[in-house]
Amino acid sequence: MTLDPIATVRSCFGGKFGIPRQPGLCPSAWGTLTFHPAYRSPEAIRGIEGFSHLWLIFGFHETVAQGWKPTVRPPRLGGNQRIGVFASRSTFRPNGLGLSLVRLEGIETTAADGPILQLGGLDLLDGTPIYDVKPYLSYAEALPEASGGFAEVALSRLPVEVDPAAARAFEALPARARAVLQEALSLDPRPATQVADPTRIFGATLCGCNVRFSIRDGVCRICEIELASVNDDTLAPPRPLE
Image 1 (cartoon, rainbow, N blue to C red):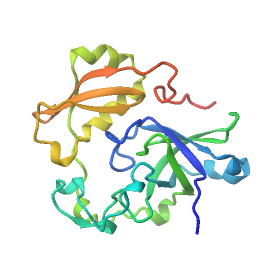
Image 2 (cartoon, rainbow, N blue to C red):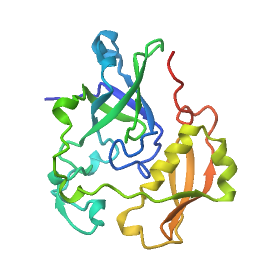
Image 3 (cartoon, rainbow, N blue to C red):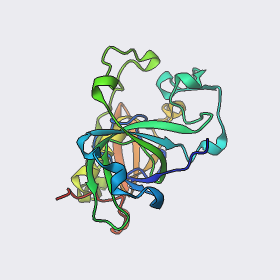
């Protein structure tokens, strides 16, 4: 079987570093799904507006060339304990495919390359190829009694503070972009092997901005925000559809 992408996602996450490790952890995150010309048909999504959430089957396009590994070291285990790749959601998989549950916020039908799906709560890198879209069925797929293995406990969050030097740039961002920065950085995106150095400054590309931050004494501090061009469409959240 040959798999060809049917769509591409544009998202507020411009780099791998800083992306939440699971969907839904950054509720304010946004993105759009644009179908490729062969699948750009209103008929293909007829009825999709009745679903609040969608499953996306996507490709780990920036790591697939590195091949797969039979064992991986999940960040949830501190990055120093190996488990089987099929007991994880690691990107280093035989077929480089991922599965993400996203919120359907709207459908843009008037654009020249429409219909375009407006998405929320996603965990996908800008430019991610999409191989399939399926509706989420809560009656069959919401299993509150399920066990979560080594990832059973929900992730804890850090408080996020903005240094005075970055406050003006932070306040200039749209409210939803500010929420993305706070939600994403509160999850502590640092590699598990690099959490011991409290003096290190990290950088992440979020909402069209280069965001520099440090984490010390259990607090994430945004110390610098370099704003992107005002023409960068990853900076501004989508406007509500009429």
